[in-house]
Image 1 (cartoon, rainbow, N blue to C red):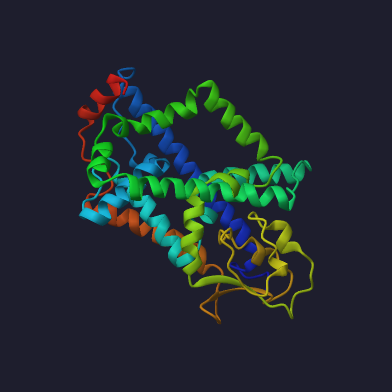
Image 2: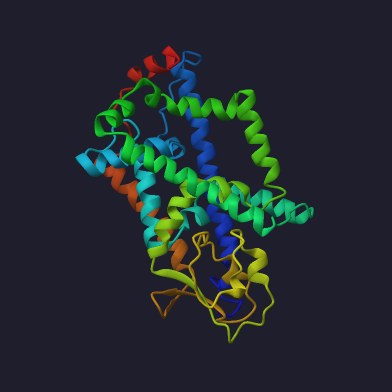
Length: 331
């Protein structure tokens, strides 16, 4: 496409940053709302602010438990329904549009991207050697299979139901809040380490430690969407390799790029100087606009939100006064 077009592929990176920024700002706003709600809940404020359900996006373990319960009983989690909705939306996006949730929505990924850009600018970023990269890369898959094994094989429906209705799970969002605003020494050390190392090793958390991303990557294997490289048009400039946040050697791929690490960000497509060298395909050969990936990613995400709101599966079923009692107990 010519650069004069409003939606040319060269504008994909700008569009991605805009999408990530908006979702990140929304998460920060929701976090602030939840802080105000929690202040009211523990008696430190007389002003009642409704608890924002979107904070449950940061409770993936509860969502995974809720998903198993939903699959076996047909019952939606009444405690953290928004978290379950967001989790199912992310899984659906991965199945249909690759790891679009990671590439276009996730605020943690966005923060990691910003640290990477700063590291590149100040020349602190370096690539780990192969013998270190591969073992570290396996860590998030080990964590994923540990959680799946624990929940799928070690916890029956009775224990899952008991946990989901436990005081701990009801107030786990407050524990998450304290993790960020008043972390203990260990938590603070871990956060500082992850932040600092992201300026040195590209997307350290996303690449090596995020089990959520590992699960989405596995599901994305069957997605019909993929970037395709035309080796005949390639001029071997390596720009796609340099910009890829997942460290995929796109220029070495023959045909479709289907790495488990691909987040569907399309930075490679945007930066490629050769027309039709890197294109987005559905199935083996059908070329489509690269903007279809972010459009479907955001549309699917918002569709699940709309369905959840309209069916009563967004706000939890506990009255605010009941939740207030749990928070005041400090559980």
